[in-house]
Image (cartoon, rainbow, N blue to C red):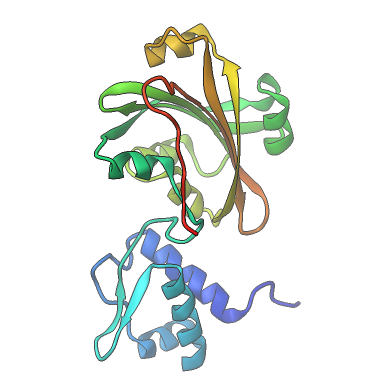
Length: 234
């Protein structure tokens, strides 16, 4: 049976998972090349190629004479040349916090066609609200594959959704976002403390490295409180 990935690519992915899960901590040195050779039972050149990938992704930095240092455990170091909206808000001196309203397993027959087609019969649904400078700003519904248990999923209070998905080998490759102005339910307007009947809605599909949809989310933003913006590198 042929391997789907080159060996050093698989090793790079395993190293990346260990960084994201805190096995290799930011600011600390990675195991030596000899130790990694022994762990994975591969040649030195294979380890060096794997480390090169992880380095190019912005997770580690090779220090001459010292070793390889972990410099980031952020999931999206070089996933996109676009700076995330939440990062833009925080870089501009705003505070952003999230509150989970509910986590539940739902039958997709009660949801829209996009959710039914993506997750078949059931999905996890996470509902949360974001506060911008302590004002309710955006309302989200995330639909995810049923993995592990609800109790395990509740860990997203401390880690990101995408790190949770990565624990089940559902690693993000790209996002597909679309935007529209849409009428929102009164219950959502109440949670966002707004009189606006129409809000900006972002529909996100998250695609894995195996080209499967691993998340569909609907986010409603009260842009009267702050416009939605994206920064791109060129």
